[in-house]
Image (spheres, rainbow, N blue to C red):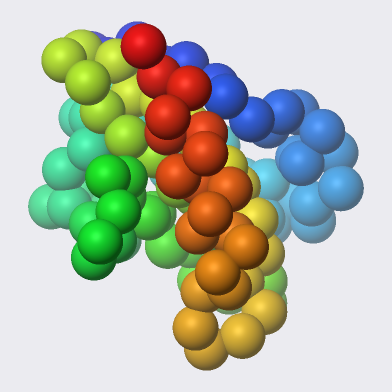
Length: 103
């Protein structure tokens, strides 16, 4: 089991999410806590050129969770709705900024 550290206000995001989206996010966070950053368990991919991973939650709202793992700690860097085909540069930059806060 892995420890989860939030570098993003997940509660505030969940307050504005639909019930279905909330369930999917919580489910993915539980998987990350149980298995760490492993793509065999959830739809997870390493972002090319970045030091963190993206968990993809599909549905009406395509939600993304940026996360990173160091030893037995999984850091939740950012959660957002992806509205375009490509991830916006500002979202990637924010994820990288959050990643740099990890000690």
